[in-house]
Structures are given as C-alpha cells and as structure tokens.
Length: 407
Image (tube, rainbow, N blue to C red; front, side, top):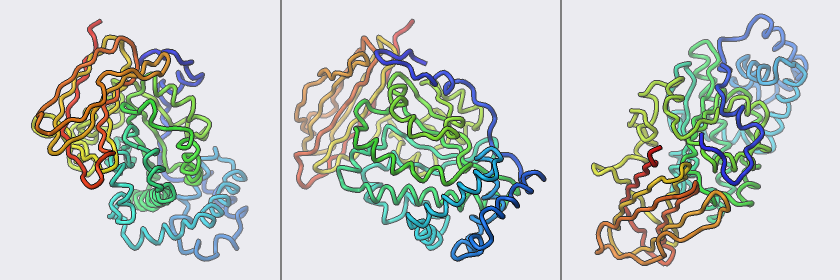
C-alpha cells in the first residue's frame, strides 16, 4: 500500500487493510437462534406478518430473513424486530413491492442491468454498474463493480438520478429474492461477496452533489442485513484513502466490519477466497465469458474500444502511487474528428497540470502515441472530447501501459 501523500491517513485505514475475520454466513439457525426468531415474530406481531402483501412474500417472512436480521444485530431480539419493522416501512415508502413485481414479471434469470427501462443508465455507465458474476470458495454469490467507471456526475447531468435510485432498489430486491432461493436450495444461508475495483477511481469523479445523492442511494442498504457478508475493495492507493475520509460517514458500522481494502497488487488476496476461474480476466483472473468481461475485453493488439457519445466526453483515469512511474498510451480514432488532451494532478496539492494540450485530432492521423513520467504520486487523465458534435458518436481504440520505476 502506497503511503498517503499530502493527505491525513484515515484513523481506521490500518484496520480496513488488515486481514478480515471470517464473518461469512454459515449454516442455518442454531437451536438458540430458532428460539430468538420465535421471540422476534412475537415482538413484530402476528397481525403484521399475516397482512397482505407481506404474508405472500415467502422470502420476507421466512426464517432465513429473520436469521439475517438476528445475526445482523448481534442476536439482539428487540433491535432485530425494530429493524425489521423499519424495513417494512421503507418498502412501503419507496414502493419496493412494485420493484418486486417487476422482477417476478421479468424473471430472476434476467438481471436488471439488461432491463429495457434501465438502458439509459447502461448507455452511459455500463462498465460501472454492479454485475452478478460468480461464486466464491465459501459458496457466496460474487458481484463485481468497477468504481472508476461509475460516473455519478454524468447520471446527474443527464437527469437520471431518480432512475438510478430505482435501479439500485431493484438490484437490492433482486438479490433479496436470489439469495433466498439459493439458501432454500442449499439448506444454508447464502450471502453476497461484493468485489469492487477502485484502481481507476478519478480525482474529480464525484463532487458535492454526487456525495449528497449517494446518501439516497445508500438508504436502502441497511434494510437488507446480512445480504452482503463481505466487501473486498481492490486497487486502493492514496486517492482511495482520501475518498474513504469522505465516504465513511455514510457506511454503517456493521458494513465496515465486512470491508477489506487491498492495495494495487490485489490478486493474491482475491485468490484467498475466489478461484482464478471466478475472477475477471481484466483483474488478473481467467474468467472471460460474461457481459462484464465483454465490456472490458480487448482486441488482438490489447486495445480497448470505446464509443464517445455526441455532446459528451470520455476519459481514462490512472492513479499513480509510486514516483517515477511511466505511463505510455496509444490510441486511434475510427472516423471524423475528436478532441484530445491529457492532464496530471499531483496528490500533494490536487492542482491539474497540462501534459498534452487540448487539440482536435482527425482520424486520418492514424495511431497517436504519448508518454508521461510521474515524478510524484497523483492522477493522470486522458480525455477525448466529443461535446462539439451535434449528431455523431465517435469510436476510439486505445491501450495504456503503466510501468513502475525499478527500486
């Protein structure tokens, strides 16, 4: 883990980066937990549990659901019952039963990322949307998210904030149903293991409006206790520490206990709980057959293809943790023209400096190459600007290589 440069290291960072205790859900309820569940039901009340539509939602009135609340609140029956009641209010206030109905109509085999109503989100943040991916060695369902591609600013700029909140609520409810079905099939509690990659998290990716908006997004998390049993955050450098200082007030204490933050050399840690064929190839594993993999797949030259929409821009952000790191890039425009520039922001003062001046590039120029040696930790941003195009999206192919200086 690189040292934090120019920023104070969060007080709880060492705890987050240490090896986490084994908190994966195991087995069904013990005899003592069964007694506690019975008391929970008494506290909640039969008139509540037998009312419509709750009584017809097997996943929400099952012992599996009560067990998750009980374990999520450390066996405290009163606190668990209170949280369950709060969950029912949240569902009513946010029309979660409508999300549930939508899921049942579409079928659990159709993941919400592929739903037609969420295509406006897919068109702008496909790579940053959480994907249901594989299983870990403990039998937990693995999800993957590339946080650097989660462009919340663009979501808000396109006035898609309400749709994004609905999408995240749909995801939570989809996993609620999926995990219940898996638990029922296996005769044991099955949880979710969220793997997030922050390697390309950008210096200016989120602004104040984004963080305020994320409060709405995170609101539902606490109403699905023990759905997520482990969070592995990969690719953490100096910038991730800074982001954690901002984000940690929004993260429940129980969730922090499940979070393990790993540095830029994260594959060995992932292999502790996932087999190589369950880890994305673009993250160092060998799995390469899902929709997520197709989004990050490269061509025979190792290049990635990206479409820059009309009136929009596209950027690649590279967080540099070691002084003396060299970044080389090669890119090509398929047709027409597009703007290009490169900037670097040092970690010490966060001020941007010009690496490549803004210029209009014509497709006839062919492959363009560049190189930058970072003398200090910071963030290098390559930006393609198509905001002047009224009608046409532009196709670019690019590849980037980052080489750390020899010690």
